[in-house]
Amino acid sequence: MRIPMSKPNRRSSRILLSALLAGSVLATTAAVPEVVEARGPESVADLASGLLGAVVNISTSQSVEEEGEGPMPKVPEGSPFEELFEDFYKNGEGGDSNNRVNSLGSGFVIDPTGYVVTNNHVIENADDIEVIFSDGSKLKATLVGTDTKTDLSVLKVEPDKPLTAVKFGDSRKMRIGDWVMAIGNPFGLGGSVTVGIISASGRNINAGPYDNFIQTDAAINKGNSGGPLFNMDGDVIGINTAIISPSGGSIGIGFAVPTELAENIIKQLIEFGETRRGWLGVRIQPVSDELARSLDLPRPRGALISGVVEGGPVEKGPIQVGDVIVTFDGREIDETRDLTRIVAESAIGTPLDVVILRDGKEMTVKVTLGQLEDEVAAASDEKEEAPSEDNTDEAQPDEAPEPPPSTEDGANPDAPQAAAPAPVTEGLIGVEITLLDDEKRVAFDIAEGVEGVLITRVLPGSKAEDKGLKVGDVIVEIAQEFMRSPQQVAEKLTALKGEGRRSGYLMIADKQGDLRLIAVPLE
Image (cartoon, rainbow, N blue to C red; front, side, top):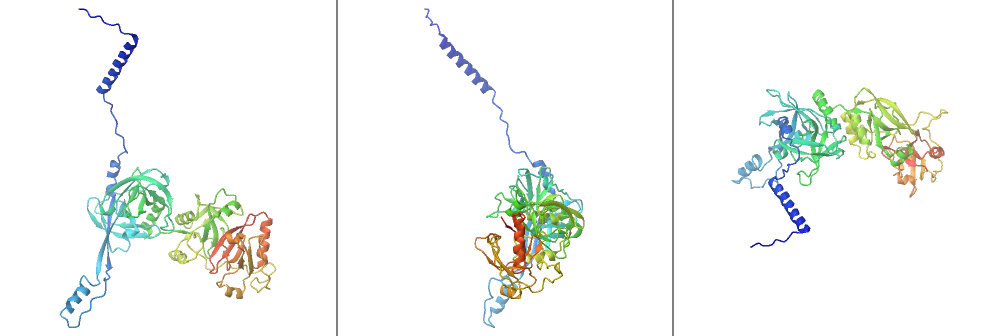
């Protein structure tokens, strides 16, 4: 029996064809599975394997006198326990005795003959220093030299054969976002490798006067101090020194001394056993917004010279009070600490080009640096009330500038002058001033050697108050001219305003004689 077949229509044919094609595609996909390529950070295994041998553990020990937890118990004389207590507390565990304290840090070999770099705080006050290599061998180390201001030290060991060493790279070529690798001894676990990026540069963490740290998120923990921070070429571009961490462990904020600062210091420690830093012999302070506007600077930059040290390298020029240093030996000065660091790193005894702004004009002068002595730096550190941020050379003058020996007509400027009513410079800067005589010096407790015109009142809401001037301050100079009388101050400020000057530069001495230079608006 023939069963009649219905004739398919065009729509059903299209549906059937689509289904067949879909099935074909699915079958093809199932038959040839897609290959997914695994992707991840490039391995640093080859790089690390060639560097691990140069990174060492630094083990130190020192004797410390143990202080007892309390007084020795009293026992009756002649008691059978008297001798026992004396033996226990005076000669044994309960008494004062010298104990050994051990600590661990990191370091790295920079010369096959045995020179090792680490942090000063790793080996500070150590009686014994031992360098432990990646193969487990140990060598006693001697201290070659140390620099507390940058927390760097160089050690020397005497190996039987040349050591694996690493070389310095140029940290100035590194950019934020570049990959770096740290190797060290965190928590006593030697040969630990961590990888991250440079997250910031030029960091100031108030660790010292020459702060210029590289910031990295490569894990750095306790015990990593003194270890190297490598670039991806295997060159050392930093020495791991500090971390920010509430818990003591890495939170991704670590700091390394860049090689642009460290390399020269390490060379000096090896050659001289000490650092030899340049000294300009000036006091500096930041460039204010007002001063930047008066110099037509698009933004505040440079370092303002607020004083010249007597007996310093530039005592007789060419640097003057009121100058703004914008470039030193070809390097830009953005803020005061840049000048502090660059002067310290620059060559001693060699003429160097310095670009300054003076009276609104840019000029280039040559200066020759002296050597910064420790006692000069220490003298600055003892100044508790030094003005603002400070100190290219960390030296402060002991006295205010002496007035010229005579006036144009030959009169002695130190001779007593007739007292005059204190002018009020209300239309200028807003202070009352008077002659600084012996009576006023005693009344306002002004130090001997401070000369100038005394401020007896600062008007509320005035420009002077806004700039921090206060009663008892002394106006020493205006626009680099020494001030002998209140009338001279008023006349000088009036003249500057008449010349169209937007600010007047005042050299101010406080009661102790510390100097600062301020720019007071005249508009």
